[in-house]
Length: 343
Image: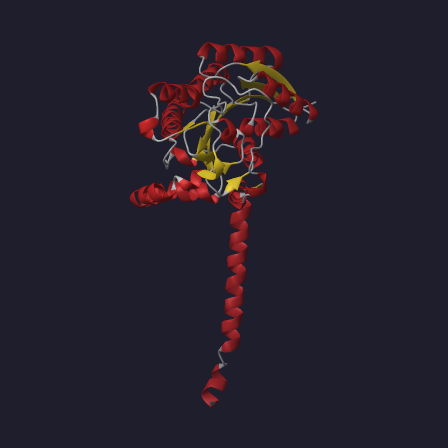
């Protein structure tokens, strides 16, 4: 009987983490579920067990390195050596910089950046002596192209890339077989927009086009089983990252003029609504947010990335077919030499 894969997912109680736990569970994995909210974690455990996996609920804050280390120990005591670790937990604040508070920058950095560092360290302590394992960082298009009103979150995502690139060089130097992949996401339909701390006049939303969290989950599962440096999920992510390389100033002006409205939608924001910056919002919120009617569960770019050899062969076949068609057309349109002389 094949041994079950052992996985740890941070931020597993809702959104991308919840969908990713479901995706690994469909493949029979044993999953350590890390988040702060007990109700959401219990919901995630129920999902995992219903789909054929096994789950261990680990309520803790990723900003606490000792708690993360203890969680890793508990996973290995129950399930055995960790094969994959997915760093996903995050918090954010939607606010202009001149209205942000120092403690908010500190908290977002502790969760969204240092939480990844602490998770990576816990994974490395176990994976490096065995010379195997895969660490997957949930990145974002915003790790390369910042947008207004999310300065703390964008900065944390940039920091993740810097940290991960440095570590990757060290693993290469050490000739380590521990793998490291960053998966950069587009806008996703997750519950975070219901509980993010917001100072916007209208309701916050992901910048369209919006994708379902299952798209992200499929990418993360694939990344955990393939040796890729980075994966860019969705054409908007590709456009943002490539555009930043070639036309950053033009993007600055475009986002300065359009980036406020694109992150808000109809209706006034509820004043003093609960947010998850300092403590989890009560309840089990699942994987999806409020944008099901506007979100797509298909992603051509991701399929091409996951099946790039098949896509390359298909492109070559199409090019060959086009060449044959053009050649046949040319051969039939040019008269034989004898007919040409007679004319």
